[in-house]
Image (tube, rainbow, N blue to C red):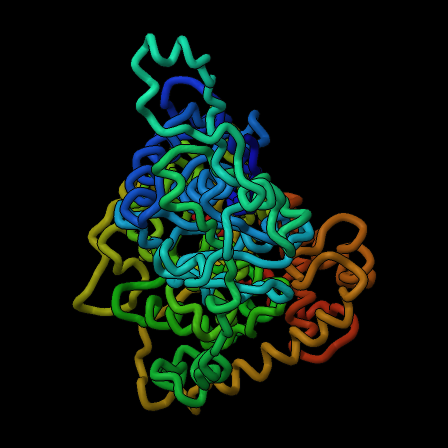
Length: 589
């Protein structure tokens, strides 16, 4: 007897369809799971066996083979439990499951038959929709997440006993067979002492013969359903039909919180920061074009305070971006509140400086997304940048340049998206007071110590940071003029985003920072005076060609912020002044 169910697993952050094939054969009672399963899947045998028995069914006393296809793809997790259990029950004839060819089954079974939620449901359901399936059965804890994918019918259950309806078929699918008895001759029966026994009928009655045909309405079932003979089966001759309409889930999303769509009710606002308007303008430019930025200044000047308010001026995620980000958080098991729909606010990740390279970039025996992927389409904030290990910082080179992370292991190679805005803060020296201008707080670091402190950040990494902005200690707190608010800054950012959306509508990019090659030369063309100015700056500062391109992209964003069509020399000059560390190196030399 053979049966097949549809399930899915994660491959990186993408869902992959898996066929769960069940074969029942005569032989010693044994259950084998093949198809490169991990330990959690191999242990599903005991979970399914206990759940099936504790829900009133019988586990087949036969040789059970479960194949997870395709067999050359490694599988992990406990999401196959439900598919294995229902596959065994339908193949052994205890359940009838119409429409199983269009149903995705995901869920972990407890020993009592209850269903536990699993991670990564969103990309699995999306893969099922791409494969042409129309419905999915998940634990109740995953129903809201599964409902985020449109075009799928969602069924949610809390226990295996909820699946079949209370009614059953009125008669068994097949009548139990009776063994044909040999009727001895009268002489043989008398000699054997059987002449005193009643006669045993040798053929089944007409009523029993009529029961050999399947009941009306069950023709064309996707699975063969049989009932074996024997007294134990005669007591359970009624076969239950598995229907799911009573488990249909209707998504009820909460209305969007005003905090997630605007800044009117935000607790943290840029108006709370006294002064530092030039830093606020730099952050506004960084948010408008998704340019990397580092703030450099003494302790207590508001570097961390300024960067933590950066998400409040960023535009919301688009539909495609929302699905990308939500899938990453689902695969990582960090998707918390799904009642409000797909994630719309851009992620803001701030890992501690003790994080490892694997934690930042992703890794593990079976690679999982790291912080750079969790910050995809959002902000990755590294506070006190030089305190991070140099080995950890160096792994940022590839994602900052390519926007993706590729992790190769013996089992497989995975590619995770990692297109983020890198925002950092650091002190000018190890004591923190270099150039603070105070009479009491003077720097006590030697030139060698300052060089050692800054040497923790390599030149290639700094070359990939577009803006390096000084945050000095204000001397006149009251004379700083009106303070920019988050609402004002966000309005400017949204204006620039609309300009970029119209400009790049025919390209697979959305931000000025993504320009490269021919697109950069076309959309950020410089006039003759601008090229001469930039060439002189490159020669005097000794900048790389990467810095050359990043200055042009930054100038393009500044021009958009001013509403200018062409990039002028003033825009280039402002873009160059944001590379403070490059200018300081030249001055020290």
